Every structure is written in C-alpha cells, then in structure tokens.
Image (cartoon, rainbow, N blue to C red; front, top):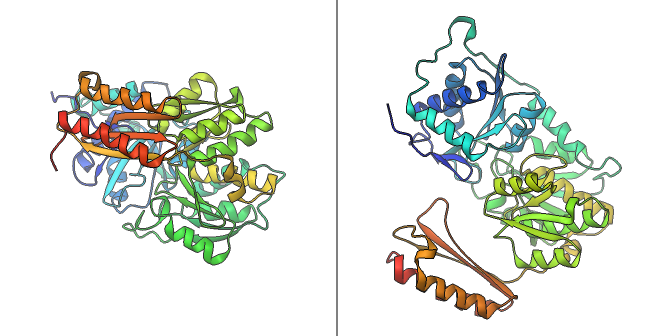
Length: 456
C-alpha cells in the first residue's frame, strides 16, 4: 500500500505537464479517486463536467482524467476550452456531481493543473481534497471495478460556449446597453478566446479583440493580464474607452482606463462596492478581500460607510468568508473578483461587466471613477529561506516587525508570510512615505536573512 502524497496546493494541483504529479498515470488515479468520492455523496447515475484551457497538454491530461473517471462508473461531460468560472456554472446548471478544470491559470503553457468544483459550483473544501489525495495514492479503491453497463460513458456538450455566454449576459443589468462603448479585450490566447468577445459584442459594444488565436503554446505569452502593456497600447491607439485583459483561464481581470492607465482589483472593488452601497445592494455593507489588498482600499471603503473584512491570500478563502458571513462581494488585488449574487467563483468577464455597468449607469469615464481610491505606497520584498521556521520562533525578526509597526502606527501595515509555493518569505510594508517603507521592508528582510536566509 503506497503512502499518501500531498499534491493539492492553494488552488488545486499544479506543475509541469508530463512531470509528476501532472502525468497521465497520476491523472488516471486522480480521476478514479475523485469519481469515488463524488459517487459516495448521492445515489443514481453520476456525471462530472470536464473543461480545459488551450494548452497543448490539455488533450493528454483530459483523456487520462476521463479514463479514470469512467473506470469508476461515472459519466463525463466534455465541454472543451472554457473559462474556469464557466465550468463552475455548467456544473451547477447541469446538475452534475462535480466539475473539473484542466488549467494552470496564468502560468506558462508547459505547466498545467487540475481544479475541482462541487455540484453547487464552489471549490472543494480542504477535507475533500485530502480525501481525494488519499484515494489517489493509497491504493484502497483498486478493487472497485464496475463492468458491463456500469462503466462510465462520455459525451461532448456542443453548446457549452453558448450556454455560458447567455449566462454572462444575464448578469449585466437588462435596462443598460454597451452601445457606444469601444473596448479592447485581450483573451491571452486562453480559455475565453471565444466567450469574451461574443459577450461584449452581443451587449452592443464595439470590440477590438486580441489574444484570440490559441495554438497550444501561446497562452499567456506576452499577452493577457500578465502582460497588459499590449492591451493598454491598443487602447491608446484606437481611442477605446476601456481595456480588459484576462488570464489563461479567465477567472481574473486587469483593466486599463481610456488613457491606458491600469486599474487593479482593489480599485475595481472600491468602485463597485461604493456603487452597490449607494444603491442599497451591498449586503452587510462589507467587502471581503485578502491581507494583500491595499490600505487605500480600506480607507476608500470606510469613507463610503463600508467595512473591509480581510482573509488569508487566496480567492477560495475570500469565498469561504463570504459564504460564512453572508456577504456578496469580495476579491483580490490581482483581479479575482467574486459577485456571489451572480456566480460562485472569480470570473474576469463577469467582473468586467459589473464595472462597465457602473460606467454606463453613472455616465463617467473609468479614469474618473478610479479616483474613488488612492493607493497607499506598497513595498514587496522576498527573502529565500533555508526552512520555513514559524515566525513566532524567530524573536529577533518579531522584534524588528514590532518596531516597524510601532513607527507606522495606524498609518501603515506590515505583512510577513511564507510563500505558498516557494521557499520564500514575503515581506510587505505599506505607508504614505515610499522611501521610508522601503527602508523598513529592508530592515525586516535583513533580520530574516540573518536567521534563516539563503546566501545569494
């Protein structure tokens, strides 16, 4: 019997395609394990939706995963390239037992990953992922082998894109139109290359679409939300009112105004939250964001009578807090924005639609709307470490952190945390004086380096 292995990170399984754990051998076992878990939750015939982005390795991993699932007597619905939030939507609307996304989001094409959604369209809790990990490597379901008519079957959902387009359009206020709006949309040669242009065009916008020629290897390559410069330049060149850049699986968005200036997730949250609050539609008068969101967001929301509730880094933790407390709006500085009135996870196209609705309804350009928030200078530094020693066991580091916090008082923040994927300690300092906080961040980094840092 093999020992359990840890393969799930902060957002599913991820790695280089054809290298453990992103191999066909592991995918067959992972598919079997997931199918086993979801079969246990209900009776009758079972179905799992599988979608992917445009990576070359998606074909290889999709076939292996599908084989594993079918071998456990579970049917699969193949939807092809579709944004991650589209899989969440279809899983729920088609009453499937679960949804699987094959994507490494904003990573380069040689990487790939697996994300699961439960039947309600939300990401799996940690305990379910742990159970799937256990069955993947423990060998305790090897004897479960359905035969004859009990083997799973597969079929393609040919109208998946159309279903998702109709759903996205329904989240835009019916009394508004995008007629007269010129926009640049960069789809990163990824999963939204068909969906995003269709949605905005059908709502009346003049769309200049780029990053819509995926070839299996150009996803996120010098385009999309990681490289918004191309999109910003096209906005300035064409005189567009807004530019929208999605990442490879389209679950987050980066926006530029009519001048090509970036408007990040914090600014979008400030704009939308204040708009919702003024119209009595912000449940709990609160927004949920992570500890990485800028202090300027907190200040802007407070001026509008809105509280900022913070969570640890990761959109899944934002969603968990929203569901636990009944809040309906939250997100991350990186552009993962969640509108629980409409969807269950971050959705770049949907977020763009909500922002466009504010622009149209208030009849104001994005550059004007963005003045609702002034970002506080923020310094981010990384220190490579030999080991992840708990911070409470590093007294000299704690002493320096406390000293910096004392100097900042209520006019800044210090955040020190380990990376979720690398042997790094991340140091973030915020405050109104950029030079001062840079020196403070350097002090904290020096203290960390002296105790556990790696010489470079």
